[in-house]
Image (tube, rainbow, N blue to C red; front, side, top):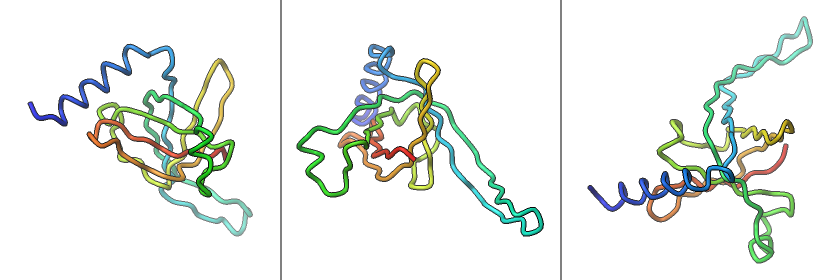
Length: 124
């Protein structure tokens, strides 16, 4: 069992322990768009994957970075629980107690152990 496997297992255990903090999140990828000139509408084809994610705000110090806006959030999820690799074309849908929010993925990082995806999200 390699060190990376150990860290991934620990990330999964932490997610189970803090299950009340993690919420359901749906990753949606727009695979294609088409404009129907006669109808005047744009149709999209999307695929989605559901997982759980911890949503957190950026600290004041992190917000000093020009790329982070005050309303941006961090999304953390275990790489073991997400069957797709996040990319900048994904949108993340969060539902908490009946209210929902849709975020665009602005940035993607991995923790040093490769156990978590750390996503920079901006409400769209």
